[in-house]
Image 1: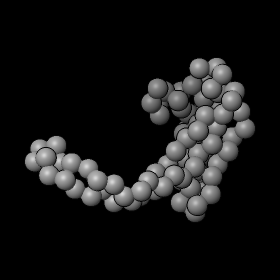
Image 2: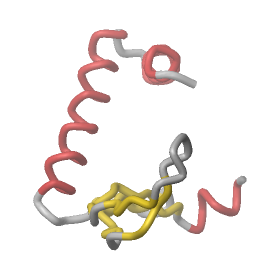
Image 3: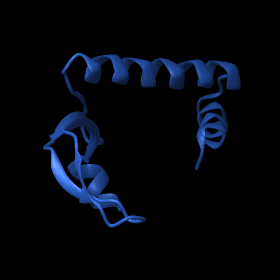
Image 4: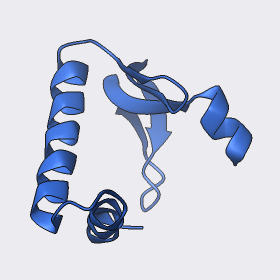
Length: 89
């Protein structure tokens, strides 16, 4: 499912326009992004939690030259499924 499919599904299920559904999705993603950027986490009970995870610097290898390289430490966004969502899969 892509964003357009999700917009159509939300609009059909809730009876709102596609423009309103798109605005709601954009608002949600912006709120999650701002919260994660600020170091927080977003928890939707029963669905899951969006959080930031830190990856340590590590050694890697360039697949073309086989030369060893250092991959920098960085922060990555993660999603951890809640119990209800996990049980429905």
